[in-house]
Length: 95
Image (cartoon, rainbow, N blue to C red; front, side, top):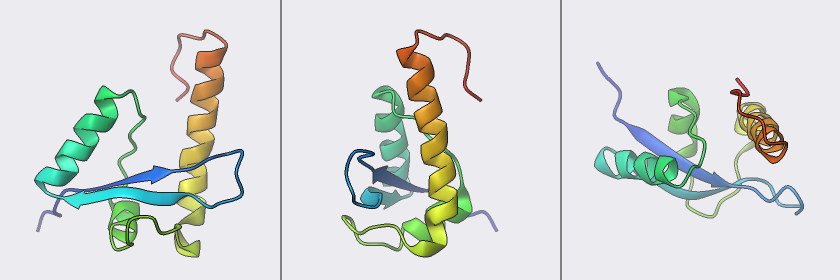
């Protein structure tokens, strides 16, 4: 059985003290629209169905649970590398 499309948007301020928080979530067409908007805005998108299934159960505005720390930390590390690469004027992919 194929899984339903799920998308979750996170917000994180590296200068703040808060944990990453869920800012948007959806299933089906709403999930597809979240991904479209993120890509159109240049926001990196990571496909991780298991993590998305965990995070979609959270209320918007809620901090991520301990179970998701490792996966979200990997995503944030990749984003930080990409931001540093772009700030340095790099053109090669960070991945």
